[in-house]
Image (cartoon, rainbow, N blue to C red; front, side, top):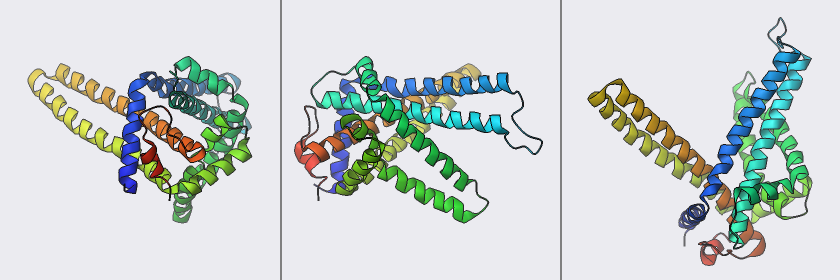
Amino acid sequence: MGRFSTSWSLMKSSWGVLRQDKELLWMPVLSFLASLVAVMSIAGVGLVVTPDTLTGAGELDAVGIALAAAAYILLAFVAVYFHAATVAAAWERLEGGDPTVGSALRAANGRLGKLFAWSLVVATVNVVLQAMRNADNRFGRIAASLVGGAWNLATYFVVPVLMFTDAGVGGGLKGSLRTFRDRWGETLVGHVGVGFAVGVLTLLYVLATGLLAFGLFTAFGTPGLVVGLVVLVAGVIVLSLVGTVLSAVYKTALYRYATRGDSGSTAFDAQTLAGAAY
């Protein structure tokens, strides 16, 4: 089986897991809500402590810098935490269990210290990459894109390593690099492929619902247009949630096979997973 067809089969199997555990869709929803609360909390503290965090030169003062750093860390932690919970739920299904939102969150809570430590690393790297992107030269922006892409691939398996081994952040990085090196083809294709597939579906959906909205507007005026736009936005949100969860399930299945050599007790086929090997 070719590498791209193998990846497509793995993505279909990921969809099979999601169909069994639709509650996994709550993870990105909870992540968004927690991120919103974090941002509002930081903004609230800023308004109370110092209403004007900008200096006369339009730069952040010490308090503003501290609040911005806290925001970066909190948002990174929220993303890492709920991603870890999704990975834990997928692993539980691969083990033959029946994951719930509660069991996924409990699994993430069991690795809370390591996840927070990793979120500090993620936040720091994000700040550095953002500074490179904001540099007033094309080289900095190009370098940020290259470094950011390499970083995302090199750290692709860090969360599964932290969740399912005793390794700390340093060991997680080493384990992720080792797994990526062994399975780099499937990692790359899966990392890009899931997003591409969801992107294509989203584009087709937007085109279809755009035509629907135009038809409703022609037939019913503004109320029809509003209905059409609501359907469009709701569908795009759902597709985004599905894509996020599918990526996490794909990653978990590939990590499991790379480290344990079995496909688990789901629709994942061992021979298909074996296609990830060189």
